[in-house]
Amino acid sequence: MPRRLRPTNSVAAEAILVGDPGRALLLAQELLEQPKMCNHARGLWGYSGRTPAGRELTVQSTGMGGPSAAIVLADLAELGVRRAVRVGTCTAIEPRLRPGDLLVVAEAHAWSGGGAGEPAHPDPGLTERLGAELRGRLANEAATIASLDTLHGGGAPAPVAAGEVADMQTAALLERGRALGVALAAVTIVAESTSGEGLEDETLEAAAKRAGSAAAAVLSS
Image (cartoon, rainbow, N blue to C red):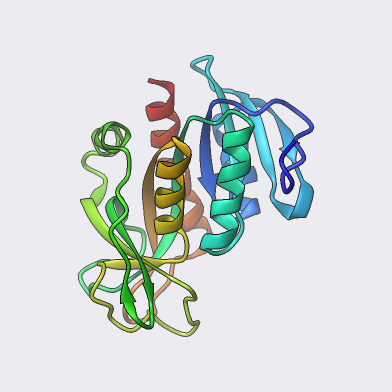
């Protein structure tokens, strides 16, 4: 039994990973027929159920930051997860990106004060199918993301030489997924521009549903 997650229902071999527990509930209600909570330990809400296509799917929150996400993914791998898609949010570094833009991640770098770490790459097959599923809705089908230790409030992060957008966990998830043998891809929603402009809650929820629906379709194929 994993040390962090305490599943009370089965966990599927395919999973959608989100940071926010509230977004996990939102996507479970959107994507699953009769979703059942499979974890509530440590506030890391997770849900399992069948998609309308008849495939078992888990939607699991990973908490905030890379260390939390990597630990949750390790527990999920122990419970049998073999493929996953991160549906997350990010902050723009490039001024051309606007709140609400969707990006499929092609490369992620862990970034600290000392600079960028080695690039982490998603599973190519899942990433290609995710891009195809979202074609026409993407601002970028091959985005580079910098995963920072912290995102300061009150505006976008200072420009870093490792990405077009910044978040706090994609690099850790991709690297940990590779080590665990879990095929993983990521799609992120630009939640804040370089000027500090952000998304309204309803708009963010709609974007999360679009990204989640694409992720579920890819994992069902």
